Image (cartoon, rainbow, N blue to C red):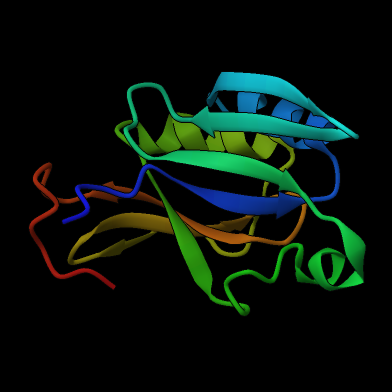
Length: 136
């Protein structure tokens, strides 16, 4: 039986630009290995996170068309915060585009933002540290 989701891929147009953005918002680069032929194995994650993101440079028209659309237009990535205001400022300074003002919901404080490639994220500070509340 599988134990956990170890990582998932995020399509990006360029490894270095994506790595620069994510490290600017506080993610760690856990690995950046040259695989040859222009391919790299680039793993990133927020400090202390178990699940990682594999930055995958899009190859070909189909993958290029999917950049920023992996969630089909929905918020599909959820970044947990423990200092919501500081994280909002860090994201904005790095080039994230907030789609709305922060709002309070029964499950916590949340704001929808987009990364430079159009992926929609929630920045969320859960009302209960155990994430027990009603999720969106």
